[in-house]
Image (tube, rainbow, N blue to C red; front, side, top):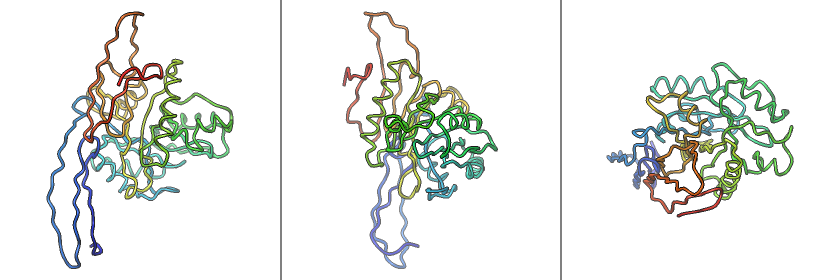
Length: 314
């Protein structure tokens, strides 16, 4: 039952990425029963072209989280991501429950954790079964944190919200990283837009990663919602698409992400003619033809081509 009043319901399955959410407004009166029928049309099918997604930053009801594992799973399924994911602060306590829920629903689950000292947060994944965070991250150097992540089986270490006040890049600029800056990570996060100041921080993050690319450093962008309460912060608001050949598996998804065959998105889908992460030997003075197909079910304001950190076409 619901209290009488005026309500707006949004019905979504992959809303903003593969469908447009449907909205129903109604006034609920005491003692009345209401039935609604609607259809959510699928407008994009990235899986048909080998692109699969996960929300690579998500919390449950550990520490500052407010969502039981069951509702994390429900919310991620409603977001229509292809692999369920969890990364609680310095904890793996709900990963087994998520694995059980995923198996019951015949979906894939990738276990992670967010290692969370006061000066930076790092997602480590995928984790081996039974492994736990075996250090006090608040008393550890960055090198000790990275080593602990690898002991847990993590193939990937991601810098979360790196330009927040306690982000890794911010702490580097302030000289506050215990052990000093260490480049032993693979991914850098693009934040979901519902976080205050995310647009400005994401721009700084992108520009920093461009600099790293120009130096030949193999780091790539990833994205996740950082949802703590799925009733407030929607799962999948930002997600990472990875190209996978053949049948999807966690191992293939991780391999593609590590190789850069991926992109971070808050809605648009990008299908490259030349795969992301590719090395392209190219002679000076000859033209290089790049072709991309872009689809955005919620509309697209602009497309910009960046070369060595500068806009060269729009």
